[in-house]
Amino acid sequence: MEEIRRAAEAYYKNLSEEKKRNARFYFNEMDIDGDGRINLDEYVEYLKKDNNTVLTHPSLFTALDKDGNGSLDFEETIVWYYIMQSGRALFCQSCNTFLADVYFSCFQCFCLDESPSTYDLCCDCYGGKRFTHHDDAVFWDNYTLLSQSRSLALEAPVQKRRNVLKKIGMIVQVTGIVVGGACLASSSSCSIM
Image 1 (cartoon, rainbow, N blue to C red):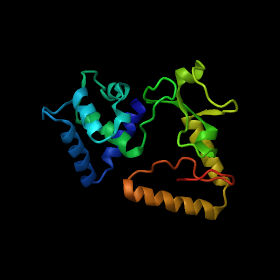
Image 2: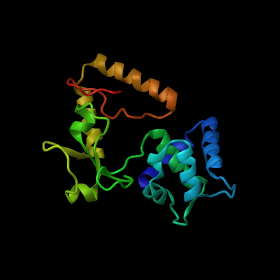
Image 3: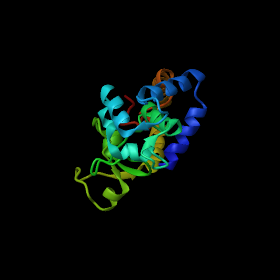
Image 4: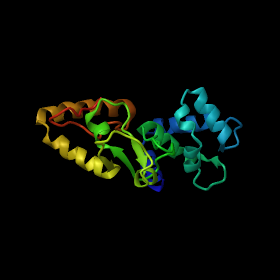
């Protein structure tokens, strides 16, 4: 979780003042009683109201609560804001815990299939073989997957890469952060949505 926390802090420091105000707005909206802290009930109530039930899993709240006091202050909520904006809310397909650090993804689901899921697993479930997936699945950790995806992208024709980068540019303009573009393009069927 510390890597995500560091990324969130760097992300926040580089936000425009308007987006920083937006992050504060979300915090104030969640802090129903106005005490400057968000407890689990406030957190869950806000996310359910916003139809964002995926993020109500207790393992995410626990991971966000760095000091373990049962509530989130603004600095801890910045991590939640980053996760929301980046699409980094990933959960293990086997044990359903929040994937805060290194995790494994099925390469075929990530890059080759039309699957909406990348079939992500925590290290414990992957290492302990506590999952069921297709027999020919090849799993890579998230760092290797990113590196290999770049290699595949570089194999694509230059014009196709440029077209993908234009699409990514449009996503960045809308969200302020790149989401979903790890496997950019290959000469086969891997593409950005």
